[in-house]
Length: 402
Image (cartoon, rainbow, N blue to C red; front, side):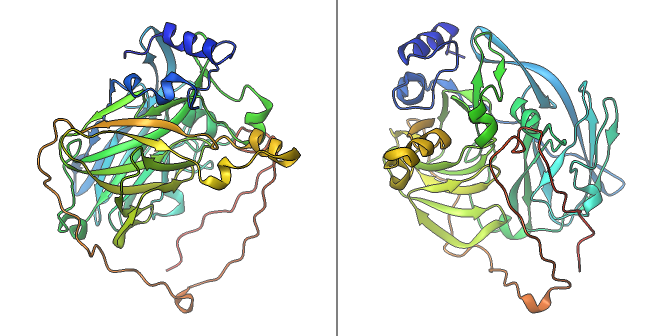
């Protein structure tokens, strides 16, 4: 990494901030917007495709502690899955029966939840399925849903936020015959690129700063340094002219409104639930925490651009009167900042295509519902939000109605 402690401290001093709680996401800070700072090669999560045992595809996942040099001369204590920070991309196929052996090598209890997967409740990995230190949990189920980009993460009661913040999360790809036949960019790490977006704050000694202010506890933990796949100031040197970007908002509370620095058009081809019926031409896409989107961007030789967060104009105009002051205190997505630099100086011709028709839309009818249930949900500010403490409600998971 080329970002040093000296760079961070100088940037923090220039911004008038004490310690290392610098606003690296904001427009005045060199780490956020000076494109020359985005020189650290983007790292790709390893691909975990499992092994076949008696007709079952088996995957081994180890929850473990580690250290990560997000900055060149500071080692940050972290947590990861099969590594020091974050986890591998788990790749499965529709129709396969899979088993995921999750071993907890941490010194505290945890869980692992398969976010977005259609599966029996007892395999879900929610707060009710605790994995004690030293134990292994092995959920087994059939992959029943279409091709899509999902993810997995800790879901430990009162510890979800901090365990994910420290690195217990990763992506899960589902493939199927339909998606494979479309000709979309699909060569992992070449023209099919995973992007896990996270914001983190750091203390002067390089340790993570988590829920250190009342603001964080009231409205959710947001950070001051952008990480992409665990890399600060990340640079993607594109290899192909047509790139498929699978984007996960892996932040605890921040909402991103993503666009390219030249506001070029791109095609959105998928959401959390999988491929769209057809590509949608956009210039920005908005992602809340946990949301995924797949987009395809076209590059030309010599392109050098940024993937940025640019808040909607309604957010940028807030700030008058007491309500505006409160809005400014409570919202952390009202300033633009850069996330990832993409350089196309070495791109080769595109291999994949974007067909005008992707998949047949799935039409759901209320008349076919096996059972109708009514839930009333409410949320207010307070200590019970994402940081632990306060009350909570469990909507018990039952077997899927068929």
